[in-house]
Amino acid sequence: MVGALMLALALAGAPQDTLRSTLAVPPPATLDLATFTRIVRARHPVARQARLARRVAGAELQMARGVFWDPVANVMWDRKTFGNIAYYDYVVAGVKVMTPLGIDLKLGYERTSPDGVFFNPDRRTPASGLLVAGVTVPLARGILTDPRRTAVTVRSELRNAAEADRLAIVNKLLLAAVKDYSAWYEAERRRAVADTGIVLAEFRLEAVRQRVGAGDAAAIDTVEARLELERRRVQELEAGAAANTARLAVSQYLWDDDGAPLELAADARPDLGPLEGSRLDAATVDVLLARVLRQHPDILKARAKLRQAEAERRLARSELLPDASLEAAALGDDATTGLSGGWPSVGNNYKLGLSAKTSLLLIKERGKFDATRFKTEIAQLELSIISREVRLAVLAALYDVGAFESILARQRAAAFLSRELRDAEVRRFEAGESTLFLVNIRDRALLDETLKVVAFEAKLAAARAALAFALGEPGDEPER
Picture 1: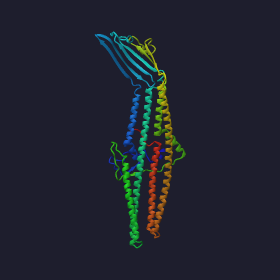
Picture 2 (picture 1 turned 90 degrees about the vertical axis):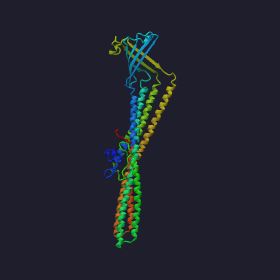
Picture 3 (picture 1 turned 60 degrees about the vertical axis):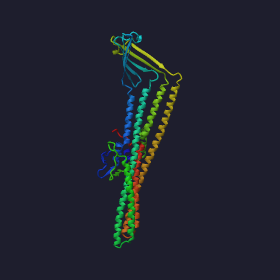
Picture 4 (picture 1 turned 30 degrees about the horizontal axis):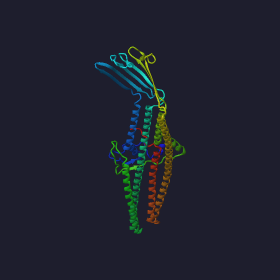
């Protein structure tokens, strides 16, 4: 159902090689809307930039996640010798792994040379060195969240916001492209109608000349016929100039796979495809509104900002607690087997440490928490505003589509009736019961009604593009 509503964009199905590198459109020299939108979405530099921005956000998220489960190795060697006396010789090496739970895992090796004279007694180790395996566990601040986990959450939401931005950028690009394409379609159809008018006027002029030569019409009728022909030639020139300008406007959206700009061939013609779509009913509207509130790019971006604010608020709340942590490590050397058996088989071979600190008045922490709380409320209000704006935009676009569908149907009926009147006037003229002036009046009326049909066809296509933009869907395409 939704695909029918957005038929004007025709986002799938047409081959992408309809335009050659030289932009010579194959016979019948037609660039249909489906192919046009696919080329714009795949090749336009703005769409390419949007895809690259999404990759940048993904890489930055990987940077933030890299702090977890990525072992960090460190080695320190510290030796002091003076006056042929070895003061100390320390070797400390280890590997640290930080987990998403806030617990750090450590595995290390310590060795103090027994030849040292002035080393700290608490750093004494067996001659072969000492193996250390332990953990660091947060006790208050950092249990639920910490700066590392908050950074990952923020980066993750930044990636979601970047994806929403990509969709919004491509949607906006496609909306502008389809509107320009619709203008090109209208201009080319106007030129075709003008060409048809010239053919009719030339035929009438020749017929009047024959009738004047046969004495069946007054000579002044040739002046009337020539005047009408000149009018229509002027209209054809104006329509041709407008069509060329519109074609160039469409060309600005066309690029090849290498990023080089392309230009439409002079003989290229537009094709909107079928304009008839499924009629909207209340159930369909409700489904569309429910879905757009879940997946519209602007709403997705606002939700990402809200989740970022909530993550920062949780971090600020955790910082109101004391900064306390417990560090426990099992120790072992060649003479013990405690490490292979795990805790607590190490017996008395362990290290324990407890550290804690906190601000007494929590002035900074309370200020930060209040700021993040207010930012969260601002983000919630922004989400409410954007949701309402998106909903109203969809309703307005749905109304426009429905209105133009009805208008187009009635205008086609009006054009059909105008053709019947023109044909009847021609029969009367051929029977000698009418004048060329009246025939021309009926001709003009038919051409005007036909031009209105063309204009409303273009407006309906643009309205469907606006609906697709309001729904936030045309730019949603898998990564190439």
